[in-house]
Length: 81
Image (cartoon, rainbow, N blue to C red; front, side, top):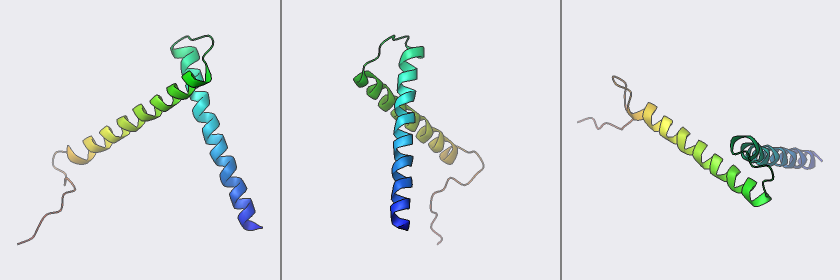
């Protein structure tokens, strides 16, 4: 019975995440682009592109912090001779 509860919680979490993801796309269309009637395809595309843009910003920020800190170790493996 414990596995059933865990699966139900995981499914509910996934559904809530998808709903929030689509709601963000809808709100971007309604208020940022001032689209009075966005279709489901436009909302899906907006959510997908916003996710990709956010992922790109996080990846660039991570790269910048990891490799461009002056005076800090850059994370590369150094060979000791």
